[in-house]
Amino acid sequence: MAQVMVNFRLDESVKKNMEQACKEMGMSMTSAFTIFATKVSKEKRIPFEVTVEPQLPEPKPQEETAAPWEKQLKLTWKQQHLESLCTKIRRSLTRIYTAIHPSITGLTMEHIRLLCGDELKDKTAAVSAAGRALFSSRTVKTLQERDLSILDEYLNGLSDIAEDIQEIEHTLVPAMKAWSGGDTACFLPYAQQLDALSQDMDRLQPVLQRFLRSTVRRPGSARFVLAQLQQAAAPVRTEEVRAALEELESLVLQSYGDLENSTKTRLESHYLQTLIRALQELSQAEQSGHDSQEKALLCLRAIHVVSRVIAGGEEARRERTRRSLEAEVSALERLASMRGDVAEDRLEA
Image (cartoon, rainbow, N blue to C red; front, side, top):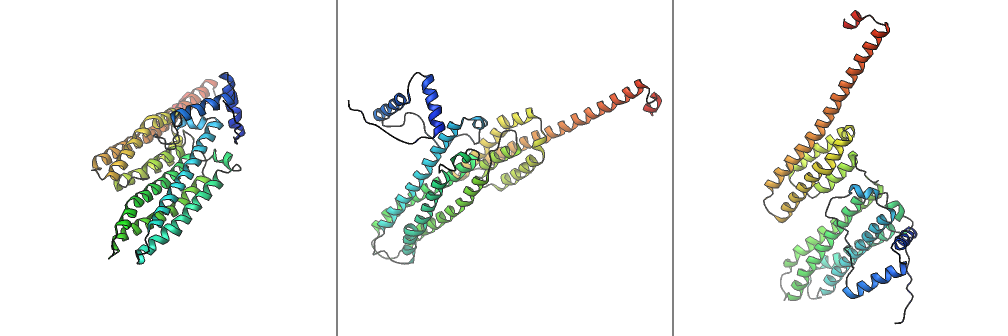
């Protein structure tokens, strides 16, 4: 079988790490890529799971110690996901725009034409350009020191927009094709939805700027806990839960740094994760239109427990500090008496 030469660019650190891994497995990089290509050609799929939307909240503690090549791979997936979302949005906009028949006139349809042909199209191009600049070879190393959970927030927002525009496409295009004349008021809801999505795209820019200003939040810090709480709470709409979360966030900022390391470990590995799951289930219930009262009560109970653990840990630390100081003063009194520097009756007085 004839063989061909395949050339492509690869980050230097990724290449070195892969060469070392292949050497330890007794094969060359060429052999490893050949195995990969053969499996893809046979199975018509990537032979391992590729995802940019982890099921567990980020950042996870083990990610803080990830090797540089692992972080680089995550960033590569995120870059590809961003561009695929932009492509998805552009295709839906183009299909809507080209499906607008000249006979459908009126301000509503002109507004839809403007949104799909210019406004949303230009904003998508800006997002794509920002993505290329973000993941350029000059900046990619600095991205590894940023808070990737914020980048995921940005990508999730863009993904929601892409899904919504595609859903509009699937209903608006058939509606335009079936239109037989008369009032065009039936198209007004579509124009309003596209308007709202245009505003959503505007709100993505501050998220990207927040990511660029961020630093990695490490386990054991108040910023790490706040990042996880804020990410899980972002879609929650129940006012009582949001108010309770604000009080919890204030407590974290005030007291978390003074907790014992063992208390922090228990909080982050168990209590906090339970609260995050409760918040996620509440958000899902709200979005699905189901009765969310029971889920909200669970969230409030979980918030109460986490608050008590933090407050209790701080109080326990204060009590230990007080006892330690009392013990030191008592020892000082005994030492002064033994040395004869202070008479015992004076100490008793």
